[in-house]
Image (cartoon, rainbow, N blue to C red; front, side):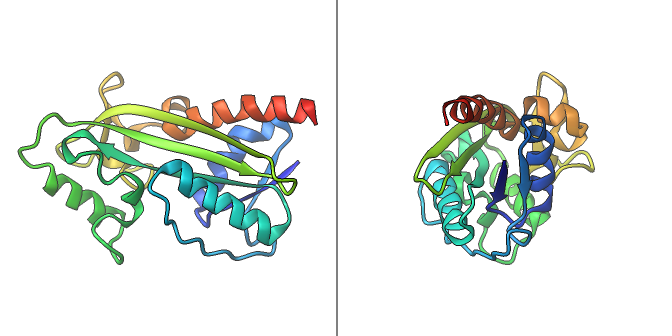
Amino acid sequence: MKLVLASKNKKKLVEMNDILSHLGIEVCSEAEAGVDVEVEETGTTFEENSLLKAKAVMEASGLPAIADDSGLCVDALGGAPGVYSARYGGEGLDDVQRYQLLLENMKGQMPRTARFVSVITCCFPNGDVLSARGECEGTVAFAPMGEGGFGYDPIFFVPGLKKTFSQLTAEEKNAISHRGKALEAFQVKLKEYLNKN
């Protein structure tokens, strides 16, 4: 089975294929499916945005499409940046500027508890929709640590492992990450769905 990823993020494409390939599922990029879709993320929840993206790419490609909407929710900031994680601080900022802004906004703030949230949605041409959510608890580090990952990974600290997401190997990260958990739950639902159909 082939799914089109509703994202231009190459790292997400690799992550999705790593996790779903053993189910006999190939996840391809929008470009490979011959579509280029820009979806305005107007939802106020990860669920709404994930559905918007998957539906738009499914309609454009005529193939089942999978989307992930994820972000960092910081308790001391009232859950921000949340669904606006990729746009935190406005357009034009890169990943480093975004997490530096977050660290600046966290000065003197307690608690530093936070969670990464990911919602995976798959839309099928027949109208069926599968969705799964994953969360990973952690804290906001006082300074960036590590070279790996992307986004807020350098400042997301996992107390149990005493490392940030950027300091973990891909295997370690996939085992505990919000996206890893969401994809795990999604796999279970997809397996049931494929057995039924």
